[in-house]
Length: 156
Image 1 (tube, rainbow, N blue to C red):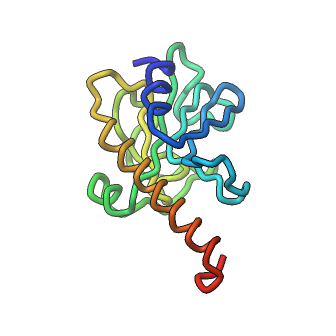
Image 2 (image 1 turned 30 degrees about the vertical axis):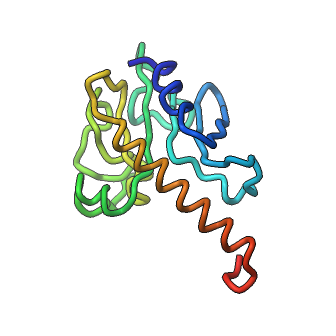
């Protein structure tokens, strides 16, 4: 699978806004494109190089990483409790090889927030259920935010 193919898959979801920085893609559920900056949390990202960190060796030829934010229940069903110990570079010690290709693993920095990742996934990797969950979770968070925004009794 290529970055372009995965990008097309994610952009097919409705209400998506895509932000780009240094060739990386950040997918937000924001159907009216009106979320304030502090609420613009992506549900998935594609990172195409070692712009921010080098733990997955994304500067290797053809390497890129898909990151997906899951619910706590799904994350723990896949990997158990989130890792909490970090090394000197702030990489979480999950016991996984962050350079492994086509293997779903906890995210090296955001696993504690229930994010998973996969470096250079193949077409055979079953990612659609995880992407759907992340998208559905983003919709629920957006709906909750909109409800709080429109109802002063719920607070902001």
